[in-house]
Each structure stands twice: as C-alpha cells, then as structure tokens.
Image 1 (tube, rainbow, N blue to C red):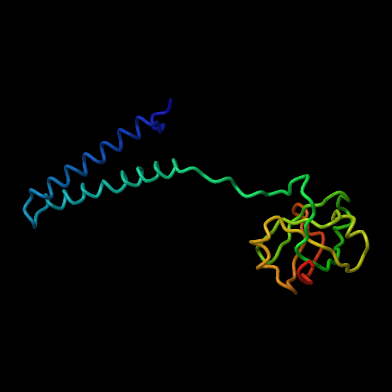
Image 2 (cartoon, rainbow, N blue to C red):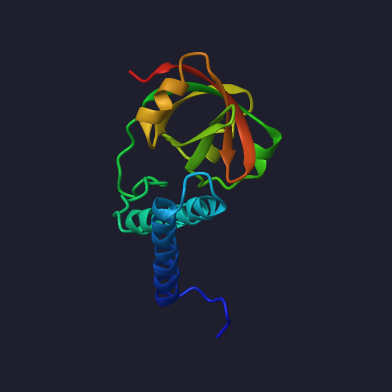
Length: 172
C-alpha cells in the first residue's frame, strides 16, 4: 500500500489535526498581545479551518442524491411525433451511410440536439436535391427555442455530417 493513499481514517485524522491547529490558533490569538508576532502566528493557524470546512462541505455534497441523467436515445417503441418541418439537402457523405439510421444530431452552431426523421435518414436522403421532411426532437423543450423558422443546421450521424438543412416551421 502506498504511503499517501487516501483512506477515510487518514482523511479523518487530517481533519482532526487541521481543526485542532485552528483551535490552538484561536486560543493563541485571543491570549496574545495585539501587535505581536505570536498573534500573527495564531491568525495563520486560525486559517486552517478553511480546508477542513471545504472537505466537510464536499463530503455533504457527495451524499446528495443525483437525479437520473436525461435520455440520449428514443425509446424503441415510442411513436413518431414530429415537432418541426425541415428542408434537407444531402451531402456527398449521405450516399455512404447505412440506410437504417434513424437517430441523429441536429447541429446548430455549437449546440447539438438528438432528433429523428419520420423515415430513416438514409431513405430520406436517397434522392439528390432538396426535400422536405418531418423532424422529432428528443428534448423539444430545450431545442425548439434554438430552432426557429429559417434556422440553418447540419445533420450528423455519428461524427459525419450527412446533410444541411433549414427549419421551415412547426409541424402541423
């Protein structure tokens, strides 16, 4: 076992030592004459309570239960419920992608939103040129404010950009 391995017992010992030194510093500061080196040393020792309190706060924060992370994929049995109408223009990479891909990322600037088309992406982009499609967003509350009518975006499957697009409007 390494000499500096952090264990709960060692953390507790360090915490007790820091708080003891801080208490000693408070006593020295209270008893020493005002303009003296001894009082300054007491002040320095008194500051040692800060890391101890920081460790205590970190310990309490670790005990707070975490909420479940948001979903990153659509449920396999979820029905398609479109929120947006979009116009897509395929890129050269669209021809090389698998025809069964249905989930992708809509990239607007530096923000990305998980989405899916009514049909698999490969099938929608099989026809060259621009075409209209319906889009469903995984988290519409966060994405819809960023995807107003006329917003330009890129469609990514994995890390490959397979299409450019523009939001036409809300799905009716």
